[in-house]
Image 1 (tube, rainbow, N blue to C red):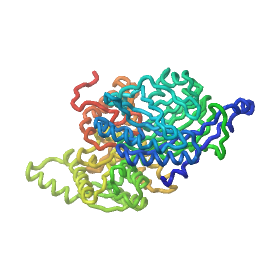
Image 2 (cartoon, one colour):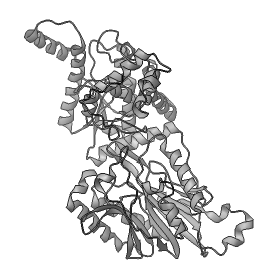
Image 3 (cartoon, rainbow, N blue to C red):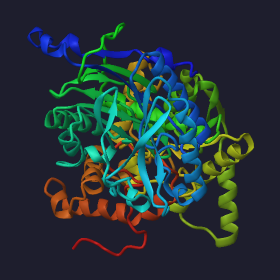
Image 4 (cartoon, helix red, strand yellow):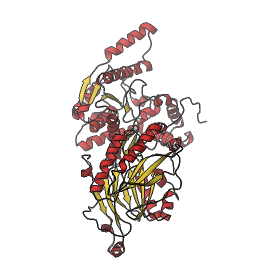
Length: 573
């Protein structure tokens, strides 16, 4: 059994304890169902590994005397499987894996997400209902999201004529993720059909606004349907997506009565009164955890980084340390994600690096306890310039020479990656990637872009959080205080080319996440500056398309939910 499961199976809530005394006599004729929400971290395509994990959680839920255990959306195959779904053998193997789980469900019922197929090979995002070793039926997702990061209409057909089920004599409505987000939809219909318990299995990706949205929605649905809502959400990193868990049980009054950890596997056990009463013993009061929005962002990035590294078979990571805040934050995240012994930082100073940035790179590595080496690039840079001069003659120092330094550094990191088998983590943030303030095949070289979705202003906030959590300066304060600079020429500062980052980040939020017009954005900023920023975003799509994947933390990021054409002549008049 998974070593952490039993330790995690502690979140238990007794609904009776929080009911006013006047209602106790009414409750005495009702049944108490014990629900276990198995908030697991599957890996897309790892059918044997996912099956084993599901079986272990079934056993643990049974040991906790649960009546029913609930797993997230597409738990059997992982979410999202994307074009794996075009492989008939993948779909077949996922169904065989589900069938093999039926015999594991003994003395308990289970709801398990998987890919279903009909005789015509139409695919469905589905939930199997299994009760005490017997397959009782399937719910097929009715509402298929096709926006943002979702492409479900590309693969799945919508379910029809779904029925409700019975668990320990209780009428239960099962639905899947988007089904619960649609007003006057599946949940209301299932409640009208008599469901006292509504189970929603989800794979809902994290963004900074999502938790509060989910809570508001689930409370609203519970009050509308007068049913208990059991919401089981996935956790884990999958490419650029992070699933944050936060599974919960909401009572018919719209109160959250059990809540799972975010960004960790968990088993949440709750007792809910839905019919004829049965005594349950040993029930503990649920204690929920609290964290700030910034702390949740940090946890999301650490989880997404860890899962990308380990799920793709890497054991070591490499980071180019410039002595700046971006690479410092990425190093701190990497150490938290995989451990200091698996992280190496490489400082590659040139003649344009100030002494303090060189010193801070080494100081950061020492503070974090990570491996560190220094490879100066000045002689390599001079050799390139000499060769170029021999071929093309003398040229004034300009952008080509600036970018050449970044490409030399990228070449060194990728060579070390090939030699050591390490994954290179790039250090560009969302602000830089948004306006193309980065070098293709230079600082963009690498396998995973840890803070690609993090605006520069949030980078500084996260750097301060790292130090606050540690109670000391892991990231040197001088790194946080120093004006940002790429150090590719004398006395260079980012703000030579860009607006102040608080202004830029606000513009990018409006243009990228909210699709605002030039006229709207110019209401509080200089119109010419707005036009400049918009032009930078538009003309650098070719760079973003070639960038490594990075973690999405905002409602819209440069990745699955940003799909602009590279060849694009549209400009707002």
